[in-house]
Length: 154
Image (cartoon, rainbow, N blue to C red; front, side, top):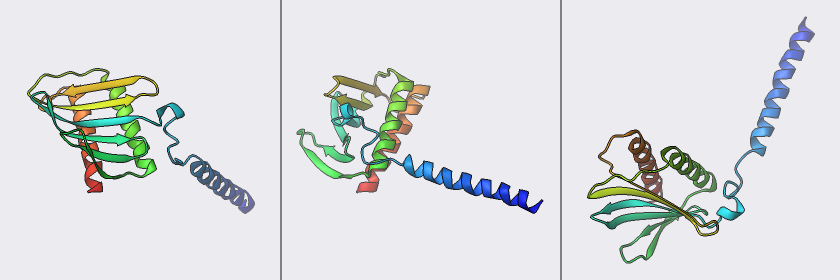
């Protein structure tokens, strides 16, 4: 009987070791979440007031976040680690797939743009942060998350 219990405990130990090995093999390696054709992806987000961009950030696939100034120059904010950049990209991708299209009117709107020159991809969504639809809830939460990532670099 004790041998049978030992065998069961041994199975759990082997399962635990295999699970650890599987998890470590599946760990994100630098830029693995960005396929070859996505290495040049740019994600921008910010605020547009009266059809002028008043605040804008840019994240490149290498995790670099920059502040885009009014004169179109860039100021480096910092670099996110590889796993966080991948997580942000997946968040944005999920949100864009859920929302599909959003173009809310207003004097002041938030925006999110994804550009990939390699694949001719251009996606932009604009929404009024004061609206409370299902789409704006998703986009507002994403915007808050992006802002919090920027604040961690400051």
